[in-house]
Image (cartoon, rainbow, N blue to C red):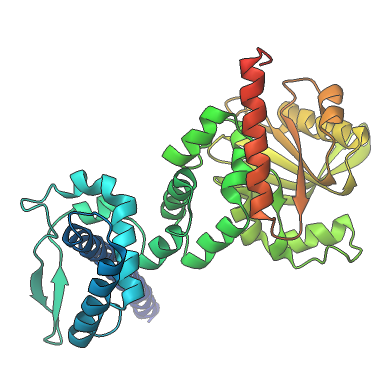
Length: 382
């Protein structure tokens, strides 16, 4: 009897495992199909854009002629294929090709240099699905058409390239891409880098190889829902971060794992508490974050120095890298940081704000920063 119960229990367990495995396969397949359809749409729109530009006297601009052709083309295509081929959409396709035509030579790996011929396969219900034969689809374009329509609105080529890379690597939905753009992620990362590393952002996206690569200027925490004009405590700020931890991890950037809140350690019979403790798997080090709602003081810096020293001497393993300390404050003081801490302290003070920044203001700061850096280099100041 006991053996029978064991067999029945084993069968149920095996069935659950089987259901789980099949469910994962189905969900993965559906996701892959949606992604493939998105890529085929993007590739097709690129080719439509190429045809329009080629027809327009090998790309020579004739405004009135072009508008007339697009109107007639939109009418014909909409009549035959339905929505999706309006004049405005065709204009997007034309612009898409013009912005990304430098990828054309790689796309032309197919024998004809055109959109690869699709093949039909039957579904279980008797319908047919079009499948592309070429691997170049996934190589050249990695996002949905909606993503690219948004990216086309970004004028700066390096900034546009950065957001395409990051949206791909981080698997951002369109909503998250918009949020990162509106929060000025590119400018905030750029303001914490030298000029060469700004260009690297456009080529490779955000790469994390040193503690400075984690930093932003400022950190934007509008998703916490705290009112800038309402009084709140450091505890309120910390609790709001914990409640929105997933969003906060996105704002922190790549490789962060949450470990503890109010991490306690005892030194000389006195208890101390680190507000937030993270581990960055890319740098293989602890990252300690202290939250300050007011102006930065030298006492705050000394406190963080003690926290970092404790983790380096008592917590981190021998093969892990030195601990990083970040003080998030409403108002930092660069001169104070410079005079208080040694150069290799691995401690950084960064401002946070509870509202989306003015992108134009960030761009202006970036231009000023670049001009100042060039002036110092030219005058031998760096």
